[in-house]
Amino acid sequence: MSLSTKIYKGFQTAIPTEIRKKLNLEVDDIVEWFLDENGDISIEFRKKSNFEDIIGIGKTPFKTDAVKMKKKVAKGDKP
Image (cartoon, rainbow, N blue to C red):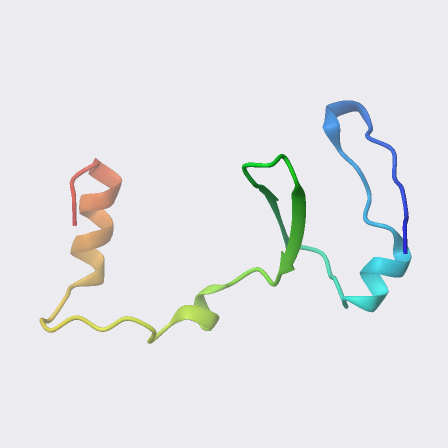
């Protein structure tokens, strides 16, 4: 299948309807562009992660204080 789209002002483009439907793409999904050493381009789509998706993935061997960490980050300090 070969489809084409136009590049608009601001370098924006649209994903063709056939592809959006086939891949079940939705608003806020992420488009990842890859350019290899030969100049070949590939595109992948992934769902945007939200806080609920990532909560509990990482664990620390020590107790943390989220409020203190947030304040440090806001000040530019390392957590």
